[in-house]
Image 1 (cartoon, helix red, strand yellow):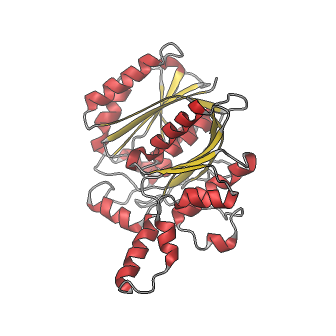
Image 2 (cartoon, one colour):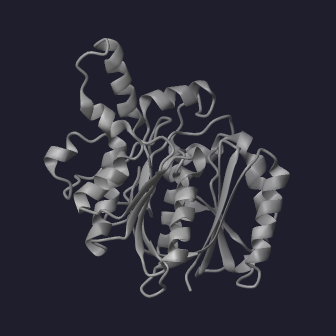
Length: 348
């Protein structure tokens, strides 16, 4: 489909700049807040006006713009955008009775503010679009990039998946049962099979193109569906494995699961794991970044790091891989049990 050339990530773990995820950063409570860097590449005057999602998305993208200064387009996937700024603006409407409102919160609250800010800072007037599809926002951004590269294979696109923890959205999802009522540490996430997960946030950025030269990895397959039936999920995954059977066998791959500690999601993950041979290693990543609509972007970043030869940390492993070196990774993720996606990444 497309090739990944460079990547960058801001997350609750030390992933920005020099990556160090061999040792898990343990956080108490049910929120995994991102470790934000100093954002040295963003002018101070702009930085202080940016909402968190805009800071994170722009901050993750800026190092890649040094390696690919003029991408042919900027494609963003976000489930909620800058929701915190949106709530602040709505509160101002009530507080000031629709009088003199601060425009900054309104400007930063729109979902496309991230792509716009990156375009303004890099003076990029190319293709600029934001996909907002809840738990499949990043997957739709990937599909968009793929379709663009089918038409323009020599182009390079900046692709970003980003979401923040906003107080408003966290409280709504907590009341709706999507986050755990009990406070647990992220290193205990999979030991508490109760309803709900822990909230997270991240920004993962990639430079993608249709050219193999210099690529770190290749996204060879992407599939996503809507549904709440575990049988449908199993059938879709089986069809994906059959499509890839000519390229590699399940014994040659690692499988990354989007398990999040929510027992209601386990039937979907178990349905997929049942199709894997015992020799296939199984990894998990939500204890690193928490649950959020674009967590799959963090998972793709992690898969790319592993394919580049990154160390396989013990805290990632659910079932130890038999193969010591990996060239193929399949990742499955579901968001709230109704949106499902699979990505197949290879180094070839």
